Amino acid sequence: MQKFDYLIIGNGICGVTAAETLRGKDAEASIAIVDQENNPLYSRVLLPNYIEGKISREALFLRDEAFYRKNNIVFFGGETAVKLVSDENKIYLTSGEEIEYGKLLLASGGHIAKPSIPGIDLKNIHFFRTIFDADDIIETIKQIKELPQEKQKIVIWGGGFIGLEFASSFAACGIGGYVVIRRPYYMGDRLDADSANLLSSFIENNGFKIINNSYITEILGTDTVEGVKLNSGEILECSSVGLGLGLDLNSDFFAGSGLKITKGIETNERLETSVKDIYAGGDVANSFQPSFGKHLSIGSWTNALFHGKIAGQNMFGEKSSIDFISSYSGVYFGINIIFMGDTSADKDTITVSRGENESLGGGTGWREQFFFRDNLLVGATIINRSKDRKIIGELIKNKNEIKNYLELTDSLKALEEYAG
Image 1 (cartoon, rainbow, N blue to C red):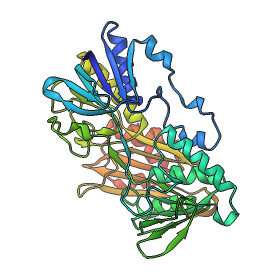
Image 2 (tube, one colour; image 1 turned 120 degrees about the vertical axis):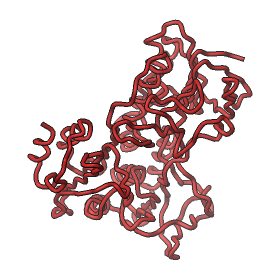
Image 3 (cartoon, rainbow, N blue to C red; image 1 turned 45 degrees about the horizontal axis):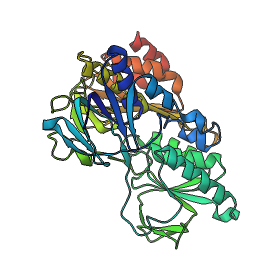
Image 4 (cartoon, rainbow, N blue to C red; image 1 turned 30 degrees about the horizontal axis):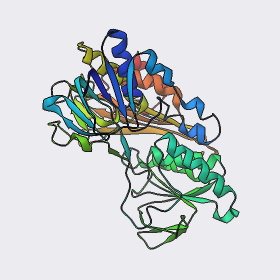
């Protein structure tokens, strides 16, 4: 049995950043990373660019194999944690190996939810999470481009950021189709009707028809996808299906560990869990956010990066707290979409929005939605208006009191005045 001062489950940006932070503070400590993928750290954010042919596969990698050797980090690639015995400070791997740890960081992330419906195991059904997913999508796109024009279609199931990545990447390769969502409008759990309609217009102007209030009950075909059946009974012909139904946490091995799980592994503002010597960060963490006075589970690259740094500092023995405003941003169909802070509306949240939907067909419309709680701006969604990001971020972080919510919808000048 091997023993390490610091053990990290997850080789994503959170886990690797934590390892780098620890090595920078302790040159002699033993550090190990476990990950089910046997690759050095790569950028999930850049996967759409790889699929669209804008960058090479090699350009995805942010570290190489030599990085782990140079920093004396033992990498258990291609291994999955199957059991955590927290009272013994041990992790068991698929290989049967036991690893004892001094401090443990759980940054295991998640995987795309897979529905249990007929036809789910046919060929050309895709997820959008790993470099291997991207490789498979590229091959499917090549196959589809060889088909007659009327068969060059994909059905995307999911009304979130993964669905946008599917639609944007396939559209860039000249392939359109359908986007199937359960809600009345796209991202209806975060966007108001005007913002959702603007976003939907960008999607539909790039070759996709959005089908609201619907879901797939069956994927049709004998070996390869030929179509899908909706809950309404409607049949949509297609040659591929993209699933973007959210993430299921990679958390089976937590069972019986004593960790408190509430929409993720619950942590305090220092990313400490309910179990001694165990920390959690990235997608798998439901961390307490001092700026908002509540726990939030935020799946973004930026959030995972900062979590890695904070976790590494605190595993070393410091007392660093979350002091950043999480955000998620992406460019789809050439349009920048940004979510900042806490965009989860509840009974105590007031939302107001502003923008222009007049130019839906030309891609020049924009929308901003603001989330207020106790006279404070706590979150915002920004569509096609990235220049306001800095000011809005300052308003959230500085906790400027705003008594007249409607002033924020008047002009950018109002935002600048509040930001000081």
